[in-house]
Image (cartoon, rainbow, N blue to C red; front, top):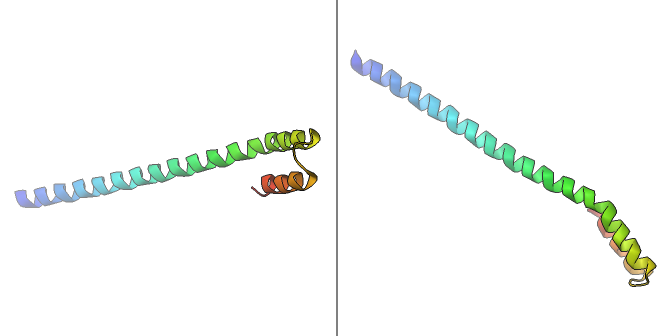
Length: 78
């Protein structure tokens, strides 16, 4: 009778450990997705600054029209 109780306790312990590991892995995946989404948002915020900087270089004749168009296309494609 006692062995049956020990077996049940062991099964419950295994089940709880399985649920704990599953929850931890889900949390780790969510954290990685969140980190990736933050990187995308930072990139989107810098588009206007990059375009303004590129335009400033073009207006000051530091780059040619072709270089300006190439840089603009590269910024907007990202």
